[in-house]
Length: 106
Image 1: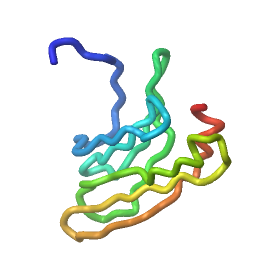
Image 2: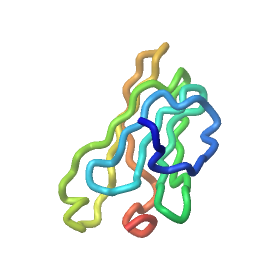
Image 3: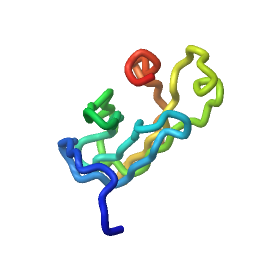
Image 4: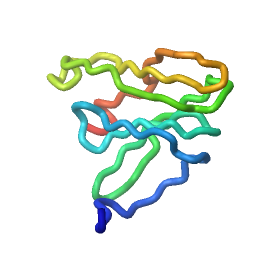
């Protein structure tokens, strides 16, 4: 890669280990921030905004992924499920976003 797609920066408080784009919402990114938990970031042309953070793991934030729920894409109001895991304590946690993404980014 020689040309960045987006040059906006946002401080997430830790080195970003994993980045997962939302399967249906453009610009919505789930990040594993090593020593600072997990963050959900919305990136568009005008601004970059941290929508939500999750810091209930007590170890290095390592893996993260979205639940691929097609009903979200179809406009039905429901919760978005996220799976995160931590390194040293080897925990997998499933959690739902507290914020309403449909009002925030759609």
